[in-house]
Structure formats: C-alpha cells, structure tokens
Image (tube, rainbow, N blue to C red; front, side, top):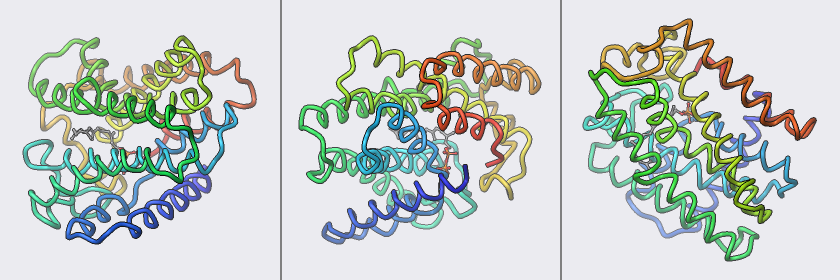
Length: 290
Ligand code: GRG
C-alpha cells in the first residue's frame, strides 16, 4: 500500500511541478509550493485512482484530476491552521505555512491553490471533452463551497464547546472532509457519463469514506503523539471540538468506524475483484497512525 501511495505522490508532484513551472513566476509560488509539497499521503488521489480503475479510466487523467483535488486539500490545510481557525503551528511535521511566511501570505497562497485547481481541471492537456471538464469543475466547486468543505469548517468551529447531536456531528464531518472524497468517487462516473442514480450511489460512498477518514483522524488526535502524527495531538478535547469520540467515547467510536467499513464493503461487493484496491485503501485509512 505504501509503495502505491509513494508512486501516486511522485506522479502527482511531477505533474504539479511542471504545471507550476510553465506559469509566470510570482512571490506566492514559494508559499504555495510549501503548502503543496511538504508531504501529504495523497489518500484522496488514491481513492480517485481506485474508483477510476473500477471504471477503466486512464491513469494520466486521474493523476491530473487528483492534482486538482490535492491543491484544494492543501489550501484547506493552510487555512485550517490559521489563528482564526484551528491555530495550529505544526503541519506534516513542519511549521504551518502561516508560521513560516506570515498570515496574509498564507491566506493568499491558499486562495491561489484553490483557483489553481480550476485551472488544472480546464487544462488543455487533460484529455477529456469540454462538457465533462465543465461538469468536474461544477462538482468540485460544490464540494468546496458553503455546502461542502467551507460549510463543514464553519460548523466545526461553531460547534466548539457545545453539546451537539450525533446526527449533526456526522453532517459536519461529511461536509468538512467527506465532500472532497465524494468528488473523488464521482469523477470517474462523470467521465463515463453514468446516470444520476449511479452517480448518487458513489457520492454517498464517498461521504462514508470521508466520514471514516475523519473518524480515523479524530482517533489519531485522541491516541497518537505529535511526533508520529506530524501535527499537535490531543487538541480536539482541549478545544472542545464536537467529535464522535466526545459523544460516544473511544471504544464505541472504533466500533462505529468498523461498522462503516462493513457498510462500505457491502456497497462495493458487486464490483468484486475490481474493488480490491479500494478496500485495501479503506483498511489503511482506519489503521494509519498519521
Ligand atoms: C478548502 C474550500 C476550502 C475551505 C477552507 C479551512 C477550511 C475551509 C476547511 C478545513 C477542512 C479540513 C482541514 C478538514 C480536515 C480534513 C483532514 C482530516 C485533513 C487531514 O488530511 P490528510 O491526513 O493530510 O490526508 P495529509 O497531510 O496526509 O495530506
């Protein structure tokens, strides 16, 4: 599994470096590169490639679409660490972007990575027809905006130090984290021009995977050390974050995550051997330590 992630990271970074190098230079390139290339597991790209392989999508196209996703993900991490959000000084074992370059630069580097995602999806070398590209841009925009990542982040901050129901915590985690996974799960079906019903099934699958990912992230915050995780741990409790652990307790949250994997396994059963890579990624997500 680690070899597969390393290959995806290498191919994605190769594409992104070339893409950025072809553009005119600016002072924001260094902080943007810092946020993009300071590590990162590339799990979202892996899910995109796993689902893409079920639908026989060309690897190069998936790497380019994944690069756009990684730009949005890097942007979300840069902004998440800002003092007005989660105020974290450490990310991927290194100083957060605003610690290294200052707050205003971090905000602008983040914004530039968001718009770069749209540039990548409309890139002429992405060998897809214009209608499909348009649809991908439309979907990734919806997943990132007020009904997706940004909206989920708002709820995450709003729920601090409040008693929040399980339903609302799940809804917040699906928006904050699940929506980008949903995009990764539906992009291959958009390319294959599948019908709305099938796309909805994969959107829901992505929400389950994203929820699993966020629950695993919360478990890491609860049990792991900063040295291993590469970011400050134990902070959810200190900040009064509304998580499933704060509501259900550690052991019940592990059970909840295991049930989620079972649910996803049932949903992907019909794809047989073709879903083997995806299932391998899910087990990695739950058992990772960073
Ligand atoms: C990005 C549209 C947009 C809005 C900004 C700040 C913000 C609003 C949203 C924050 C969303 C966020 C940080 C969610 C947490 C998701 C999460 C668990 C991130 C960690 O992902 P990993 O472990 O990171 O894949 P690596 O370092 O491996 O890339």
